[in-house]
Image (cartoon, rainbow, N blue to C red; front, side, top):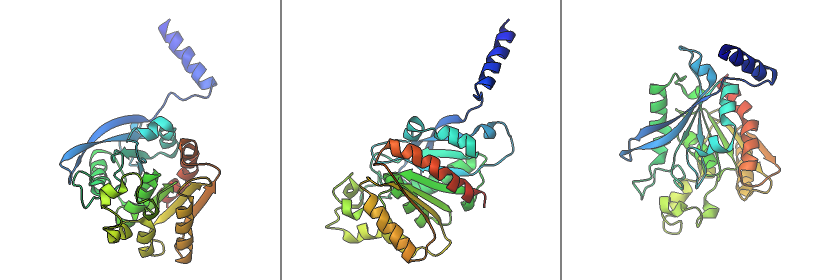
Length: 273
């Protein structure tokens, strides 16, 4: 009788178009070499990873925004389903509520550039069947994480080939009093040169054609709209090919749920080059 019920329920799932397969979500601890402790991360393995013992997969490093954690993307979006659909591993590192993905020059407890760009990459390549080359590593993030995606990719071109910013804070200078950025870099008034060399819009001036696949996605009512438009204009002037999109919406998960779906084909395309 139990076998009959099992087969019957399977038929119901098939008729409804539902899959019994799903991505596997793992919570892991990754050693942070410059902080002397382990830091949490969420790893999402597509179902195709589990069904094969030899296949290797590209990795999306998906960064959270200010005030959030490594678990936020999985809670707020269907990123696990997207990982299945596009057959990629996704890792969401915990970067602290307001790290801004810097190796802080004033706070040794906040060394998250090294953690994400080096420690997490090393961990993933050691513990999972990754395609361990820059072409198969992408960074994406929302808000603070959008800044982080471009910031880390530009500073680590030998590690990442793709960077996607969703509503990213791509110029931190107009927001000197916000989100504890000054606690990571020091006062903008006292250390203006530190702010100048750590803002994405200035770092992007060093890019050469073809070095990095870039996509930017921002809402038309987002408080970061102006700085995103400025970076788009600068990249265009400098001849740096990139994708830029504005869509209706503000700064929040209602926007990012749609944005990550829009941007996954771009990321997938870079992985398949």
